[in-house]
Every structure is written in structure tokens, then in C-alpha cells.
Amino acid sequence: MKKWLVAGLVFVFSTNVFATDFFTIGTGGITGLYFPMGVVICRWVNTQTPETNLHCTVEATDGSVANINQIKEGTIAFGLAQSDVIYQLYRGINRFKGKAYKNLRSVMAIYPEVLTLVVNKNAGISVLQDIKGKRINVGNPGSGTEVITTATFNEAGFSKQDLALAAAFSLTECPTALQKGQIDGYFFMVGHPTANIRIANSLTAIDIIPLENKVISQMVKKFPYLIKGTIPWGLYEGIDEKVVQSIGVKATLVTSVDTSDELVRLVVKTILDNFEYLKYVNPLLRQEAVTKKGLTEGRFSAPLHPAAKKYYQEMGLLEE
Image (tube, rainbow, N blue to C red):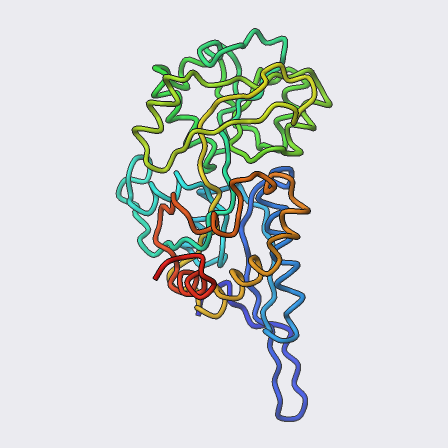
């Protein structure tokens, strides 16, 4: 039995034993979008606990890599992760060379995330190359943001060594660090709008810097898990660009091949049954591209868990 499947709340009444099995969803920082997504999913799952005896808990983590590593270790059942991190770790390539995790399974691809460079408006940064010699937060160690930021630097022809400081504040700390002048900017792979950037914008004047079209084209061509991404105009007050061009990935719910069909089916069914409400409470899911059908389309960087695949087929969302 997996470590996360811990029997608890055992009550014995004569010869009857009722046990609730607990499982955890790994998310991200509390000001990001993974955490509230996990909270909503768990809330819905737990309304069914009296019938299922399954209780969901949420864990704030350092993000994609940390979540997958915890799934591998058996300390959580599910985690949210970027499609690029999933692709590389499943195959044991790049920074995960020799560390392939072939038991990783996709559950659903929920929404697009866009690599976002947030800078102090007075930092003298208007294009990506301007961050040379600046103090930039490149992403929390072990996060998907750090992985894709490093790859972007490589495609743009420079590295973290070209920065005055490659900082590693948590994403929760970045808005305050920007305000205090500890950093000139920070990268964040995230869906939009996000509270994190709104907080930064309330503390100091900010810009969001686009990537060059050449860098975007090179990266999408080179990396099969990347898509062209945009940040629409009007989401954050005072941002000059009408539309910010960048690269993106899909935020994907993942698990282990060893996770029971019953549990995977419960999570998938719960999300689909409450999908319209999820879109109502989460602004980033109101994009036209975010549909029930879209949860099963493209960019799966690890195979679908058999129980998820079967349920999608039953619902007519995936061909046999």
C-alpha cells in the first residue's frame, strides 16, 4: 500500500469497522494557481467521503519537480506539474538524465501556463536581453519555472552567470522582494490572471516583458511540450503591452501507475461533474480553449492513467 494511503479515523462499533483513507494532492505556493486548484478539487472529493471513505488533503509545495518527486517517493497521490517537466522526467533527459520515472501517469491537462517575466518598471528592462547584469529571480529550485527559465536563457544565447544575481526566492516572496529592491524582476510560469502578479502590481509599478518572436519560434520547434502563449491585455492595471507574447506549457494533474483505478476515477469524475463551477470560481479557466474536451487533448508528456483514459472514453471525450 502506498505511504499516502494511510488508514485513519477508525471507529469500531461491535464488529463493524469504518476507515477513512487519506490521500494528498501536491500543488505549489499559496499565492500561485496550483494551490487553490487543489483546494477546490479536495473540497469536492470530501463532500463524498461518507460514501467513498476517501478524504483529500492539499499540500503547498515548491511546484512541479517537487510534486513529481513526492509521487515517486509515495508521499502524495497526485500532483500538479508543467508538461515540460513531466516530459523530461518521464524520459530521464536534460537535468533528469539517468533519473527517468516511467511509472508517472497523466490524469488531465487542465489549463495553459505562460512563462512570465515581471520586472520593476524602473529597472531599465524592456526586452529579455536587458536582464543581463540585473538581479533576477529565476525560479525556486526544483520548480518548473526554474527548468523552463534556464532553457529560455540557453535559446536566447546567455545563462544565469550573465545575471548580477540569480535569486531563488519563493514565488510568494517575489512581490515583496521586488518592492524592496532585492530583485529587479522574476520569472513565473503561470496561468493568468494570478493573485501573485496583482500583489506585485499593488506594491510597486511593474511591467511584463515579452519574449522575442525568434526565441519563441525556436523553442516551440525544439521542444514538443511547448506551445506559443499569450497574456491578454487588460488583466493587470498599468501594463503597457496590449498582448504579451511568450511560450507556454499545460498544467497537468499527474499520479503514479500504482494509484488505484477507484481513486483516479473518483478524482476525474469529481472534476468533470463540477467543471462549469470550477470555471466560474477560477478566472483563468474561462479562456475559450479550456473545455472538457480540452482536458484530454494534446501535450500529454506521460501516458494517461488507464482509469482516466477509460472514463474519458465512457464520457465521449476520448476516442477508443
